[in-house]
Structures are given as structure tokens and as C-alpha cells.
Image 1 (cartoon, rainbow, N blue to C red):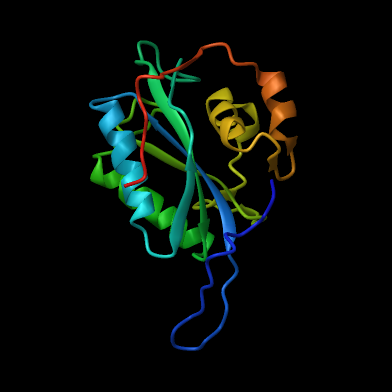
Image 2 (image 1 turned 90 degrees about the vertical axis):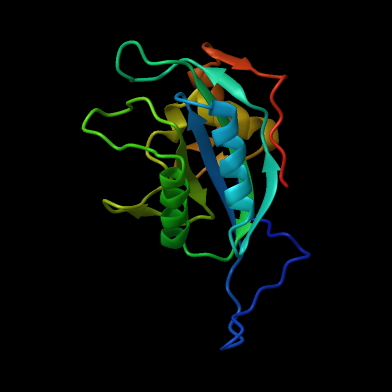
Length: 189
């Protein structure tokens, strides 16, 4: 993945004048409970409304089979959002969790259980983290077609740090179980 910041954005701390690096961010959004389309659009809007975050692209929406989810889970709507930011990765994670909370995301004991909204940080520039609260790049992104295909639609030459080109990863995962939803278009307000 290239780390090309938006050339029209210059950001300096207003108190110190210190320049903060601009990083490319990839966020994956998903929903399989409630008003799925509305939740995704609301998440895009909330990300775009985040100070020091500039959305640069929103992928097509895919309807996808649940992966490693409890039996009987409904289909997901998934997409990817690209953004440039000067925020620290942990601040972005806090924002992602806050956006999920607005949409009544419940975190239970069962992994991959149905959810109203999931906002995952896939990459934040070349930042690496393996803490309980922040894992970057996302540990399962290389195996998830519902992340790779929408990301590929936006940045076909992107690379997942530590895993290689997303085109190669997508070739390995395939796209079975993904259906593009041309009737749903998410917009940056």
C-alpha cells in the first residue's frame, strides 16, 4: 500500500507548530443486524466527520456470507473506507469503537456474533501493533475476501503490510460468497 498523503492537506499542531505525519488508513465496515445500509452510511458519515480524518474513497457495498459466525447468522453488508489522517492509531481505534457504540453494537462472549455495525482498522500507514486493544495490521484481513475485494476495488495495487499485495491475497481467498450490491451506494456527505 502506498503512503501517499493528500497533497492538499497540511496539518500542524496549532499550539506547538509541530507537523504530524499524514497516514493512509483502511477501515472495513460490516453489518448484519437491523438497518444494515443505514448503519454503513452512518459509519461513513461519522468517519468523515472525525476531526483530522479525510475520507478519500468508499468502496462498493458487498453482501457477504458470514465467516466463522454462529449458525443462523444473517448475510453481511460490507465495504471499505480509505482515509488520510494525522490521528494516532489508538485515537482512531477509540473513534471506531465509539461509532460502533452509537449503532448499539453488542460485544458478547461468542466470537463473530451478529452485529449492527463493525468498524475495523485494517491498516494505519505502516504502523504495527500487537496489543490487546490494538492489532495492526488487522490480524485476519489477509484471509477475508470481504475486506480484500472492496479494498482492491479502490486500490488494486495496495499491499497489506507483512502479507504482500492485496491482489495476490484476493487470488488466494477467492470471491465466493461475495455479491456486489449495485443498488447501494454509500456517499461521503
